[in-house]
Image 1 (cartoon, helix red, strand yellow):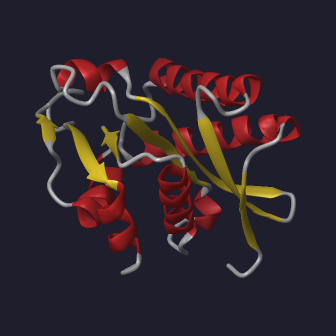
Image 2 (cartoon, one colour):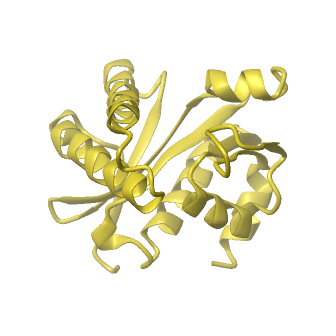
Length: 186
């Protein structure tokens, strides 16, 4: 982990980042037992590709990515942008003015060694530097939900069976100062 660099993506990173999105999303769907939902996989990949394009074209005004790199290999990503329509609708617009942290992806070869935590800590500081006091985060993936519950506690919103029987969606509202304090414990 000593050689990990956290930085903003460059245009030349787009192809490798899009490859990372495909690898992580396909792997996640398989681990969740929904790997046969090929159209959903492609939709998710396309959404992340569009987010990255929005960041690069707007020079981080619309979306803001950070990536973890080891030499020329992209290990992971994280981004923030406007709260999604799903979050806004599901919370009766209570969170629509917050930024949403998402695209917290770590390549399967680098999972469970602290890359995700490093990306999160870097994003908290980036948000704080921009004057952001709180953000929201959501997940429909059961594996990720366990991670977020461990870090942030019980979700503020639970959408029971949102994605089908046994597939809930969870949404958290998080204060930056709390996230920074929690991050010091991991």
